[in-house]
Image (tube, rainbow, N blue to C red; front, top):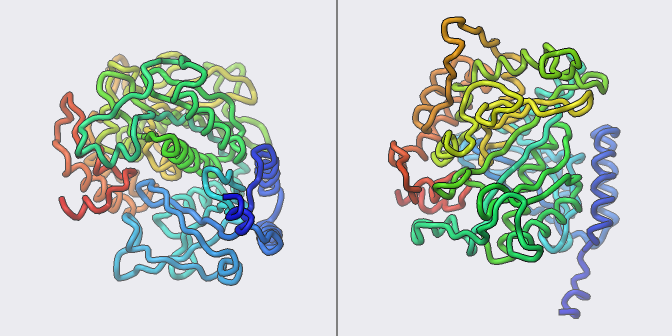
Length: 478
């Protein structure tokens, strides 16, 4: 083993050094032009002989995370002409228009823990371009970047986001793929909120995943077992909205790999167990201008400014139409069950956790809104784009005095959510009719593989045909 390591001599960086390097890279990305970033990282890759490959990653329309490893020398020679077959990615281009391009976002570089990703690699995100080198309409990382850059240039606004992503740790490797055979998941811990033995399997998993994320520049804040047995959550810091979405994808990737290394599966199905709380991706969001949080007003109701209240009002008004984006799977609608602190009520509250939007306690720096109805299997780029654009451009909620005591609720099944999504002119306007049609089509394909009524038993179909579960061969056997 030592001889093999000496022969290969690929880059392996200690965790403490990794954290310093990744935090410096994040700061550099904020203050350096794209051209200078490319020049610097090209020089670094050429100089660092121990790097063998660069992993480039992107996310499809439904939220699946895709990665390609490029030989370093090839990448440096061909960086401006990287292409791939978009027709092989569900939700991207059709067969007759298959070729798409990849544009490296050099400022997104992360230096990687070798025990998770293997030695000798760095990772970067890419934006997907069409044949004419324009941002591809169904790549919502590109669309989110475009929209937030437009907000910054036109109005001086910056969107800050963080996501609290919950998941479950279950026994065995590839437990989701095997669900059709086993018919159940097995808890690895029966503890609850904040409770685990220091070295039990759940705590070991949380510790290892959190250490890796900290080394990757996540700026972890806290990590702990969640309310349900075998459930976990690791919180990382507030940042600009594109990096926040990148963090969600890397968070889930690291969790899955660490769990796999330990002989378990990290699942982000919203409700893999009946009778206990499901998992969410509470999305915290605020707007700033010239470094000042414009959601804050000390004299405002619940400490919020009129800008924040208008933002909330627009989201509430369009909540049912955009529900499919935030709750994108058959299984997600099991989570919107009022018996388990479900955020299914279309209202806002500083205290009621049944509200889809909560107002956390905050000050002039930390004031934000928390959209609680987002599921952990949502495409983070698409979800953050939709929430932001709805809050900025939607129609405000008009209160009907005759119905003020009647609380609306979100759809309780995916089929109703699809109908509302497809019928919405507003969704077509903010997402583009092409994306509205494609997204609804793929969600309907999944819905048609499950019974229309959810019932009280978890069905194998809602697991094995889930968009994040890599069971591609099954789709052709249905």
